[in-house]
Amino acid sequence: MENNDKPLSTDLPKISEKEFDEVIKLAIKTYGKEAQTQMLFEEMAELQNALCKLARNRGTADQVCEEIADVMIMCLQMAQIYGSKRVEQWANRKMLRLKDRLKHDTSTEAQG
Ligand SMILES: [Mg+2]
Image 1: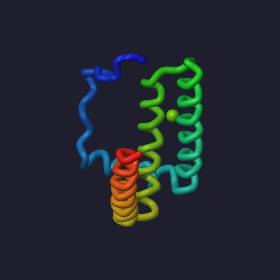
Image 2: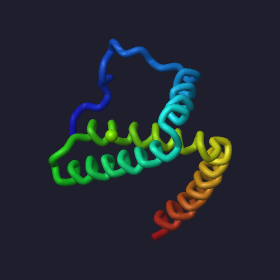
Image 3: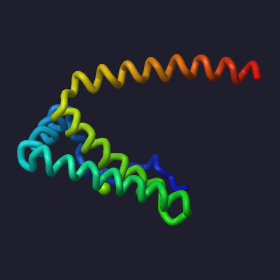
């Protein structure tokens, strides 16, 4: 596996949180909900492909990272469409549930 700690390019500016949100909203406004939903499907397939290639030693972790970023960007657009606050609430609920399960599973594992 290669070194993923090095930045892709030092000449790229870091996008601000405000700009990030504006681009997410503009993408939806420009291309529409249906097109962006289709794009999410494509990006999920690309991530699946990158993970499969990595498992067969035909790809790199960096390619996986790139596709994770694409899927995250599309998911953020979906959240914007369907309700970012609601997604945040669901994510919080699910993380708390995972935390509880891990507490249980790590304690039973320690006993076993
Ligand atoms: Mg992609």
